[in-house]
Image 1 (cartoon, rainbow, N blue to C red):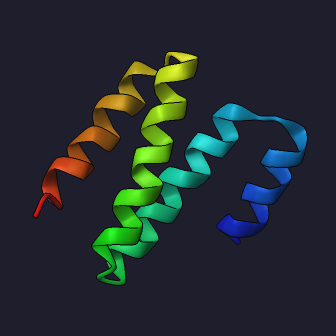
Image 2 (cartoon, one colour):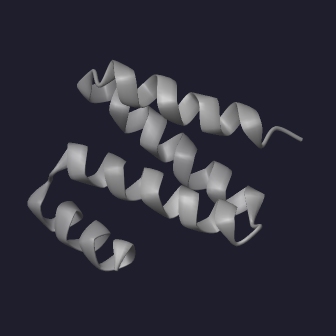
Length: 70
């Protein structure tokens, strides 16, 4: 479902929605044990959160990235 909402947010140009979708997808991949894919999505989320100034979300996702450091 997150991939479907990702496509919708892309079409709408909803940057906050995209960032949230990326963060959620990162969590899904992390739960599945795919740290590489989780990192990829979380980094995209952080980039968008920084772009739109969502400081609490930046801190949260950066914390998640720190937890899966190799």
